[in-house]
Image (cartoon, rainbow, N blue to C red):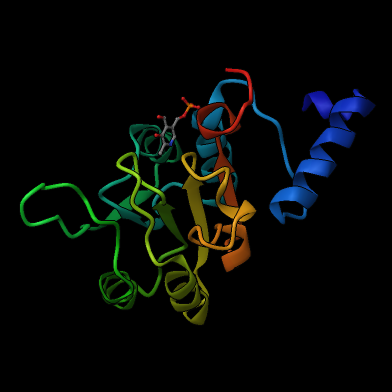
Length: 175
Ligand SMILES: Cc1ncc(COP(=O)(O)O)c(C=O)c1O
């Protein structure tokens, strides 16, 4: 049972958060974005399902995948030529993997990455939707994205089915 099921104040705050971040429903989490990754994946994929996922995912998303028993199909991020930092996923690389795995149930992105790089979510989400694949974004490092037009667009504004975010990382949420 969710806290908000019996606490009207929490439910009201969750509804305000949903409106603020552009979701139909928002859930406050205990145990951070890690538990959001687990909750969304456990709710949306089954053992043996293929999940297309960036190799630049956070370890909590990998742990969530292991819990589901789904099979990861990896998209490799491009690396910066001298810094060797991941540059996120390209729509071309994601599309190639989606086309090679037409039975994939879910595309799971981590954007922005731990290194602060945002993928082109607008195009990636559109490519996944064109193939009837749902999209989930680990947006732990992007709680601020929806609040300024010069920032990359947020997962929800790009049409992702779900996203987790961490106000305790880049905003002022308590850890
Ligand atoms: C991209 C990403 N996702 C998820 C998490 C997990 O967040 P939390 O510590 O809130 O469980 C982190 C933590 O650093 C992260 O960087």
